[in-house]
Image 1 (cartoon, protein in one colour):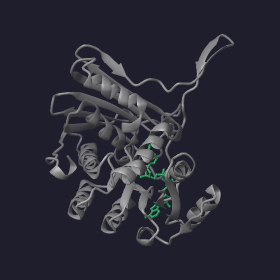
Image 2 (cartoon, protein in one colour):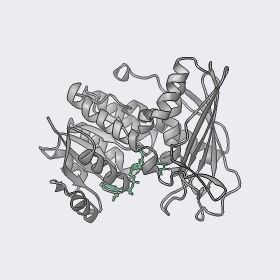
Image 3 (cartoon, protein in one colour):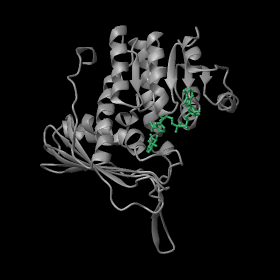
Image 4 (cartoon, helix red, strand yellow):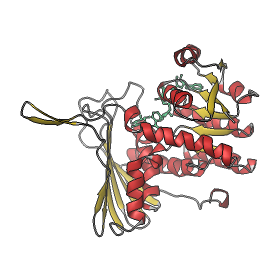
Length: 337
Ligand code: NAI
Ligand code: NAD
Ligand code: ISE
């Protein structure tokens, strides 16, 4: 059986996911697309030779009889409305991060999903499918380095476009670490503080870059994440966990090493699209397979999206207060256990 998919948002990652759903992943077919920029939606159909219909908006795409499941790759602030419409229609939905722009919005989604009585939502936290992070998780679970004490991370992008704001360093960028790190060390966040080092001259006016987030967990682990989105030199994701008995670290992305002209050289990646290609493939294949075999998604849930949104709200409050802000998470409902 082939699952018929409607895609909302045909920008950068929308096209990436359409390409993989069409050419890499088994068991899915794109039958519908929409974008507030209708020309972009039409161009996408032609670009990938899709046998699909362009709908005027998300609501009409979700309502279409031949759409079995929905993939949301629109801008973050548009996600909540589309996810709620998919839940109301009883259709499974894969939503790119963030699930919603605020914790209140994510809570509305959780409430609607629980009221529907069926798990329908998977959030695009693809790092949980990355071989490097899975290796770190296994090492911690096997007590290879004893109890984790500290985590040091960096999330660096070469540049960002003019729409990117100081808050987006949290809601668009740090959100990946927010999700993956508590999952990795099986702990809960308790507080966060954000510090701003001297600003880079490469940032557009008004954008605070870089930033350093310091998160503390209930078990007393201290996590530092450098977010630097105008680092110029490449796309660089670092994560090192310091434990009582040793250290584990993400591997460098593998690339050939060249010895030439008195130099030892290895290129690094420049684009997020290349760093997590395999993880995106695996997460979307898992979404499709779970719908077929279990009738519901089994990946990162709306509750995971809610945890990330509560934490992101506290980080954004910490950006302006300059203080340590508490992260108050509710007990996970039985529905999500
Ligand atoms: P983009 O700006 O390239 O594309 C967004 C598209 O959505 C645009 O074509 C826009 O016209 C459309 N759109 C916006 N609101 C819409 C609405 N209400 N209905 C229909 N279409 C709408 O953005 P990009 O980089 O593709 O990011 C999209 C989403 O994917 C964001 O939530 C972003 O955080 C996420 N993302 C996730 C990544 C990951 O590693 N998981 C990487 C890049 C983006
Ligand atoms: P983009 O700006 O390239 O594309 C977004 C598209 O959505 C645009 O074409 C826009 O016209 C369209 N759009 C916006 N609102 C819409 C709406 N209400 N209905 C229909 N279309 C709408 O952005 P992008 O880089 O593709 O990012 C899109 C989303 O994907 C964001 O949420 C982003 O955080 C996420 N993202 C995730 C990753 C990842 O690594 N998981 C990477 C990139 C982007
Ligand atoms: C983008 O939306 C992503 O999700 C990328 O993975 C991240 O590195 C980047 O900072 C975001 O803007």
